[in-house]
Structure formats: structure tokens, C-alpha cells
Amino acid sequence: MSNNKSDFWVGLFVLLGIIALVFLALRAGNLSTFSFAPTYRVHASFDNLGGLKVRAPIKSSGVVVGRVVEIGFDNQEFRATAVFEIDQKYQFPEDTSASILTSGLLGEQYIGLTPGGSDTDLKDNDTILYTQSAVVLEELISKFLYSKASD
Image (cartoon, rainbow, N blue to C red; front, side, top):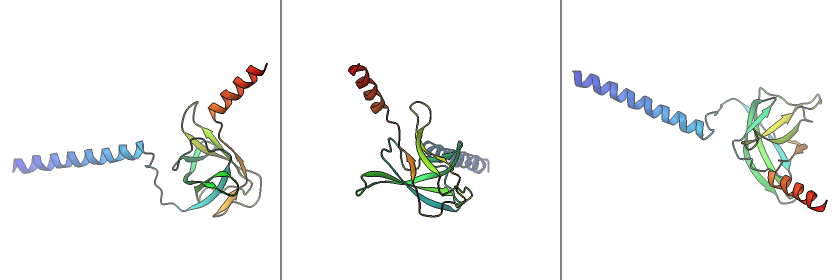
């Protein structure tokens, strides 16, 4: 009887350990924010995405309102494209602007949304027209060095 009781507690402890490991793996992979809330898709084109990745957060005023779901390249305009899903509970005007920003000096990149002043909201599969590309540190350094060399 005592052996069965200790087997139960050991099994429970192992199960809790596995659950904790799965939780940590999801947190490390930035996958713990799976949401089954309704969303709408928004498209945007950028000159340079920098290091933006799929599952990168979409933030407005520091609040995560969505995630990047697809990154691609437009062969007609020769620009990078990003498709992201925004939670339905967050509505943005159709003249909202999107910028690729960085958390900290060398942190992860995310898309920041700045609401506009329009009375109509973005709908599913709308395109954000006003975008600002990522600031690439190497380009800034080369511009600085080139400007100093020409002085």
C-alpha cells in the first residue's frame, strides 16, 4: 500500500515537471501567447524589415495588440511585406501608421502602430499605407563614417 502511494506522488511530481518544462519551452519560443480570440489581418509594405521575425509582437502604446504571421517579398514593388493579425478587440483607424521599432538598443524588433485620425477603422485584409522601415545599425554607422571621411 505504501509503495502505491509513493508511486502516485512520484508520478504526480514527474507530470508537474513535464508541464513546467513545456511552459518554459513555450515562453522561450515566444509561443505562450496563443490566443483563440477573433483577429483581423492587416498587410503592410516596408523598404527594410531589418530583423523582424514571424511571431514578433505588434504594439501600440506599449500594449501587445497582435502578432506578425507572415513575412514576404513583393516582386512588383521590390519591397518587403508583412502580414499581421490584430485582436478584434483593438480597432485602429484606416490611416494608422506602422513602424518597425527595436526594444532597447539591440533588442528584438516589433511593429509599432500609431493610430491616425480617420473615422473608419481597419478591416480584415486592409493595407496600412503609412510605414516606416527598420533602422539598420550598419547603415547608420556607414553613413556616419562616410560623412566624417568627406569632411
